[in-house]
Length: 307
Image 1 (tube, rainbow, N blue to C red):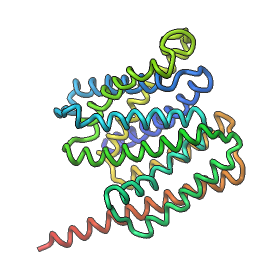
Image 2: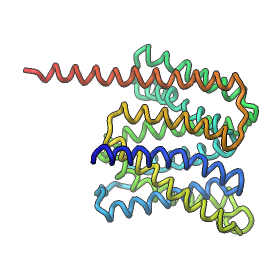
Image 3: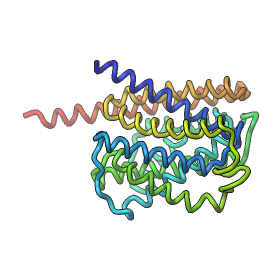
Image 4: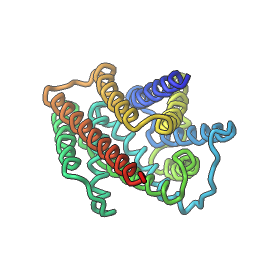
């Protein structure tokens, strides 16, 4: 029974994580749906979904002050908006590989701002990750300077968000669902104020524009899937080991890359293939060393606890 539930959770996460990338890309390429408006709808869907989860008793909200959550809500807006802009302006392969740069940037932020130290072998794995992303981006036939700028800002804001989420969860003693319950509506409110300055609200190309029924259906579906992504990530982390989650992440990474080249006919050069291989090698090595590090610290703590 447990294995069945676990398999269902992993499959739901796999399907939703891959679907959201391709569905968003389809909306940008085929319909030209505005980016910020789509992000706003995703936040609204996530909040409504969490309200339903709360009503079903899946989690209990924890009272937090708005000032405690505001920096997270701002960075949450930033990372989703800029990663979506990266997806809109880059090939799926370049978008997916650029996200891999989050790991080296997190290490850099934690080293410079928090004084955290990392073993040399961890730092060395960041070289093939960075080199692979550079090779893929540089030799991308559909190279787009604006897309690379959006991807770079997206990586920086995503890294800051992930560092702050870890710090805030520890500081406020809340889980990811409780934190997201406050973040999502606040991020929604921020975007409601921002959208009219950057995108039309009514008329052609606006959120309330003359969209076809199929476009409206796809937008609503992407909102449901965005909520599913958030929910399944939380469930998997809570119900599996770090090994399962990390290895599953690499599987999604490969499928998304292949899907981009198959569905959107993105050309792939030999140099790009080399870049992808290089990045994947770096990610696998990083994960292996981090997990062996965790296992080592666990065995040490067991030795300490022995009488």
